[in-house]
Image (cartoon, rainbow, N blue to C red; front, side, top):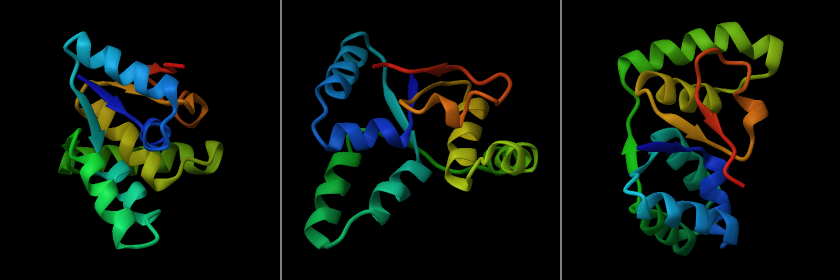
Length: 127
């Protein structure tokens, strides 16, 4: 299983061919694609009306959503203490990174610079 960052979801929702090919290939290889509930929230907040919200809800149903647990919360807090001031880590990215670390998943993102300072995180830029 891999963890897709919000950037991948946004690319997919916009019909980006590289994102579609990457996800199709991952699924053909038997890899499930998970997302943090934080990524779901980021997509929902971008909806401007009920039609977009319904479309987004259907889109997100294709992914395994990993909820925020106590260990993920504690890890996100530690990441914020360590990297907010020095690297500008923001809350959603802290929770996404914490999810990858706590669930021992590779984080797939088109924005590796948001996460590369975090020790032990497995990152992949797929396209």
